[in-house]
Image (tube, rainbow, N blue to C red; front, side, top):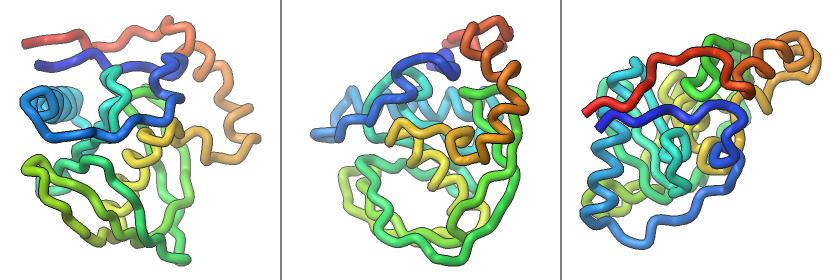
Length: 171
């Protein structure tokens, strides 16, 4: 089911998410909701806190759909790249963010199997962005304070939820 996206100002987005104890029917249902919501909102990645669930799960589709359960970034390259990012939880805000060019992640997939995988360039950026959600970090936390100050009115609007979104729950 397509779920409502939680916006900046919702406390669930600032909590460190809890580990998933086991992959069961509830977990599989959450994964389906994450994919359906991500695709319905034209996202490339979506973390459980963004739909109000404080668990360490995110999904992404960079050409290959993947499920990350209890992910840990075990390597980040020293080489960095700056590129524009946006977020469904901070709608209509796009800012340059510096991230590692390459990361390696250890995670469990939807079958409960442990996976270790490396990502580069755009895929590495998406993994880091979604992983940050599980830590209670938003991309706007990573931009210079001068930029946050410049967009403060927009951020306040989002917090007040005065901005209308088209993310109503749909079956």
